[in-house]
Image 1 (cartoon, rainbow, N blue to C red):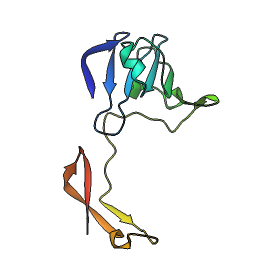
Image 2: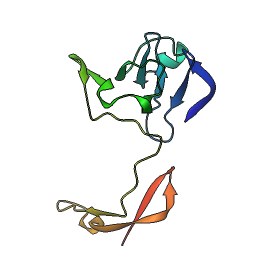
Image 3: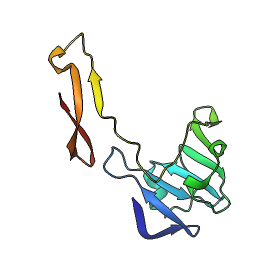
Length: 129
């Protein structure tokens, strides 16, 4: 969700909501986008360059406008370019059907599930068919 009235380096800040740990997308002082779940980022008013995902220099383009080879993730060895990281303004479509197989326990939950018109915690919900 866009944080209304909040900017970092003159660019918008987004906060992940309703899905696990808090995280933010913001522009760091070095002209890179960062995705961070470190509370220190918010405490420093986004005036730092910390994150587990980073862009190369963004040239004032929004994350959805950057080329696919602009993104990298950080692990214990350093930064790693990753062509699979992508940003979108739309969530991916939920599949109409899901199939669960659980041969070693809770077999009664196995089977086909159909996408419901209801949602749970802001996310799609599937019901057993």
